[in-house]
Picture 1 (cartoon, rainbow, N blue to C red):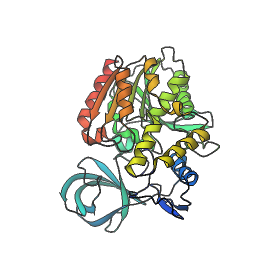
Picture 2 (tube, rainbow, N blue to C red):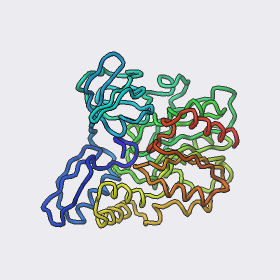
Picture 3 (cartoon, rainbow, N blue to C red):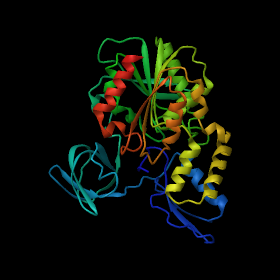
Length: 390
């Protein structure tokens, strides 16, 4: 799984073997929380469930800058740092955009540094890589004008970016919904293409974002309450003159949109969907992550039961594949078959079950929500063609 807020947090190190009878086990999460707990099934399930639902965690910085001079940086080798796609390198006080991979050896990767956008990059700094690439707002990061607006939400004010189209505007709005723990900046990669479509784009926040109201339990609800904030954004667009909306969501943002479709009779106000590596089945996603870490199945089963209990839902509520039978609008689905964060197979199942309405874009080797990073021009071409067609 990729580090830092791309979807589910998970233990950093692979867990090679779980002793049947050990007094205590230590697990380090991607949120940087190391804990000691009894290895009983209930305790282990509690930990795994918490990693999925907990909002706050300590950042970890697993990648060290071994050397930096001119426009070249040598980093700890990881699957991410060695991947020759646009990425950012983020440390506690800074942000840089990584360019091409220059060389790779057993322990390190040397890459070009395209731009240091914030802070001082020095040898010895520790950080993490991110697929978001851009940092800032639509103007500073992508040269697009925008207004900072407030969407009235169920729990309080929800800050959002309202980006006008780069050409003549129509009265269709795009509402862009980021993933679990991600910033609004997740949308910055696609934003120029969205702005060129002729539609206004509302890049929204939702409960438990740093600049949005917290939920009463300070937990993610995997889209099961966050959908209400997406609905608030739709209501905002309608009140501002939108004739209809296109919803675009990444990862858990996609799950929130699918939850919305369960609850909302759009009555023609929904024009189309764009979903990038959405969580179509939380059950299989958690199982996949647990298998990657060699977590015993009974722990995973217990964690799923605890998640259901804390959210007040059943196992079937965490699987959106049955919703495919009700899909009635054009839908663009991006999926990467090497996604190690969100299970890709349920997304493919969903697409096949709703083939009449779905355009499926399949990639490999990109990872979670990184289709744009793998090939920006191809990603944008699919997106632009779809928006033009609907």
